[in-house]
Image 1 (cartoon, rainbow, N blue to C red):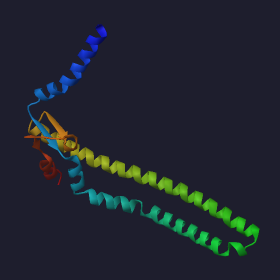
Image 2 (image 1 turned 90 degrees about the horizontal axis):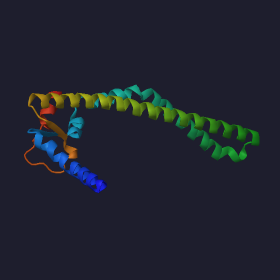
Image 3 (image 1 turned 180 degrees about the horizontal axis):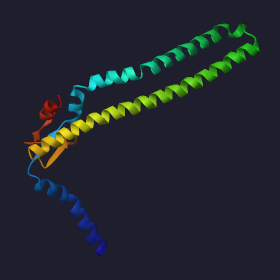
Length: 167
C-alpha cells in the first residue's frame, strides 16, 4: 500500500512540476543560440586566426605525407630490383615515418579541436551573458533555447535583440 502511494505521488510530482514552474513564470522568452553563433561577427575572424595558428603544423604534416607517398611509389616501382637489405631498410624507414606522421597528425587534431572548443566556449559565454542581460533588463523569468521548443505561441523571441547587442 505504501509503495503504491509513494509511486503515485512521484508520478504526480513529475507530471505536475513542469506546469507549476511555467505557471509561476509570467514572462518567457526564446532565443536561437545556434543562429546567433552562426551570425556572430567575429566568428570568421576567429576561424582565420586559428587557421594561421595551425598553418605551420598543417604544412609540416602535408610535407611528411608527401614524403611518405614518394617513398611508397619508389618502393612499388623499384622494390623488385632492390637488394633485400636495401628494401628492408627502406620499408623499416617507411614504417617509422608512418608512425611518426600518425602521432603528429593525432596530436595536431587534438590541439586543433581543443583550441576550437576554447574559442567556441568564449563566444558562447558572450552570447549567454548577452541573453542574461536582456532577460534581466526586460524581466524575463525564463529564456529557453529555441532548439528545445517544439511549439510556441505568443512567446517573445529575443534572438534579434541579442544579435544587435553582440555586433
